Length: 250
Image (tube, rainbow, N blue to C red; front, side):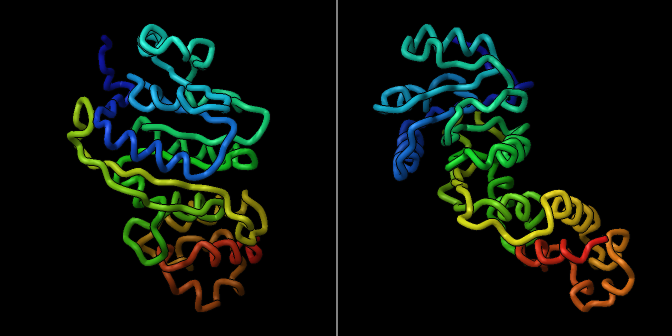
């Protein structure tokens, strides 16, 4: 067996019905290369290894889990990358799909790493803390709409698939979970540059209680700030409106 390590945010999926739901969602769209993030005890891995005609790899930081997987699922040998997902190189030369019951302590960082790889990422299906999942798919006007909502949706379509009860995990986390899917937009929103978008969005939500005029005044000339749009707060602007605003930045 293996031990569970809180330091790595390990809450392993044990509910077979939930595993099958995730596998069914994964197979709705064709793929040739698949990366599993954090296979852990192999709840999803045992099914992923049986998918025919694909190149499968898994990235796992915990050496104990790697030994467990290799002992229990011999087919995974030579398919495991022993690294942190956040520090690894791109796993395939061609486009690939990402799947995982993501460690909750780094799940937002995983999404932003995926942004870096987005020319080659065709789909991500992941288990997240419910609050993080809701934030990713939130639209303007929502209380949980924020930086990750805008920056992910600037480049990806998002779908909130289903929620998962705490008792489906070992050990049960103290939060509810949800599975979401993201996939590249056919056409990313119009923007001056990624650098300008990131700078604007982070500044706007860093002081989300203030009007845009006060939160981002250092990024615009005074004449631009006179526009009525700046009377709004960050959560009232759509993703496309953030992109459009970047063209007026200093």
